[in-house]
Length: 245
Length: 221
Image 1 (cartoon, rainbow over the protein chains, first blue to last red):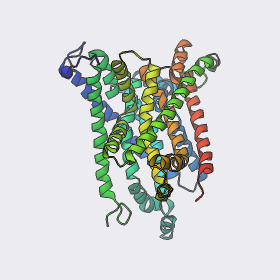
Image 2 (cartoon, rainbow over the protein chains, first blue to last red; image 1 turned 180 degrees about the horizontal axis):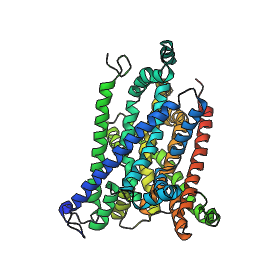
Image 3 (cartoon, helix red, strand yellow; image 1 turned 90 degrees about the horizontal axis):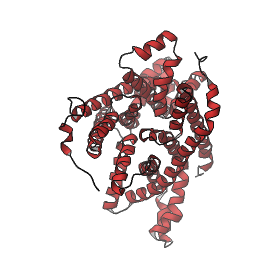
Image 4 (cartoon, one colour; image 1 turned 30 degrees about the vertical axis):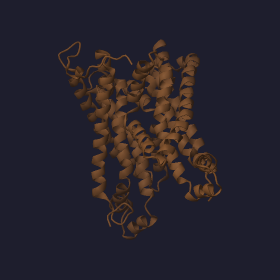
């Protein structure tokens, strides 16, 4: 293998500018985290609402929730990213469309976060639904027997249990958000993947670049895993298979 | 708001889009076949009594599963020419990448499948005097495979969607073809909508097939 190694490349200056390559990677890391966390908040909020609605006894609400999930699950994330960036602004009313295209601040960041957030919300909705449906039917009846309204039954009986049960699948979803945020390169968000390509082309030190970026993605996955692990420990349900005894 | 859309550009670009779709489908099929074969081997390694084999397979699977696919595509595209000394096209590079990457995901499915076969089956194989290889290939794997067909196909739907990511190295798949057609006719919006529709229809029909299959394949116990 004929390759010129240069591990000091990170501290060298980029070709046109006074930053170092390390600065580029740090910027990339920052945007990756910003996009992922914003998307995660959107996804968790929407996903919980839609997942819950899909278990209610109202037929049309369930159908709406199902349509949401199928829509976001059956189009590749990259295509969704391009749709949000290029197509959606065109379909807006004229004034709003002009504003989005020309004046909206941090356009790429907002688009990427919303897109990734909605995409992930469909997957979370699926898990929330499964979590609620895994509860014994008696829990719902118990709530009703106590004289709770349906929203109260969800709020005080079903959801607190369901959310604690689905922490493990949510962990892998949280790790996926960081991985999926890499697709934002397509709309020029300056996140890690975008920066790694830029650095690879600019410095021609591909292997060093990719090693660094891969490690940074590892760090994200590891931290996400640990954070969720902590949450899992604290919220364990006593008496369940994985719970405290 | 839809009045400005000009859908007449879609019909003339269909043949071109079809070549793109053919590549996407080919990539999906190659990666699925290669990935399932490689994945089954990885699963057998993980379940084997050899610590070295199990450790190596686990490390490989965990590594692939914690890196974004886009980065894996970039890695292979960089490394294959360096290792072989010849430049390979984006299309070939993508085939190898997806096979190696999907193998990690398929191996997790096959591992679950193998573990779903009851221990008594292996013991029965031993009692009949079959070797490990015979027990696996005549008794365990056929059942594991059958149990896991719906899950394997669901993974294939995800794989099909992920093939769009070859965009980053410029391989000409369905999405890339749509982008080129959009540029040629100066109608990118229509093309993006159409290509999203194509993916949607293909994926949702395949997932309906999986649902049907799930009912049929299920072994009555």
